[in-house]
Image 1 (cartoon, rainbow, N blue to C red):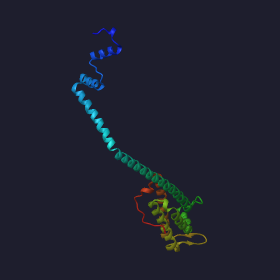
Image 2: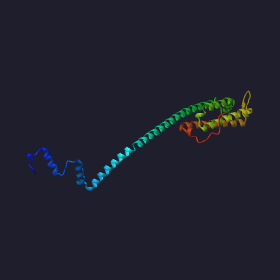
Image 3: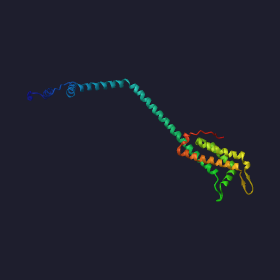
Image 4: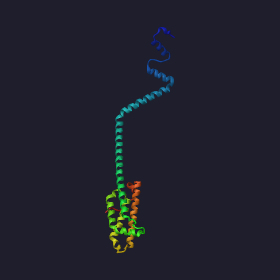
Length: 231
């Protein structure tokens, strides 16, 4: 060991580093440390990692334009899909609003068509009489309902309402001669009574259908195709 009293501080440090086997070259120090700590295996891992990082950077630089283009294409596709979903949602909102309006109109027509009991002793035969007397108004009511609100009704509801109107027209054109009114009573023939019952049955089916459509939103997914058209 050299006497440190006659050496500078830098010289002392160099002597201490030399005694520890540490040189001035950082790479030499790093490689020496790898060989000392992990041997050849650690050194090989370090070289492989360094090579892989270098190759990855080179690949990224080489393919940057392609990656940028693919990224922009993906962004454009996402934007198109978002626009498509916004448009679909807006259409669904419009359809729902139209459906609500159609259901409201139908229920109003239903209440105006179905007769109310006017005295405690009246029965269904009296109700048939009221319907027969108002059959022209009922036919017009159903015609206007389909004309104004068909777009907001499901195919099944349209079928039921159209069938009710068919019954109304059958009563008007084919059975009205069975309607006899005298000073004291009104007489309906059996065929006329059955057709009135069919009309009411179709209206009740339409009522149940529009309520179901409104609750479950089945207007857009109706699996029963319509066989009737508004005339």
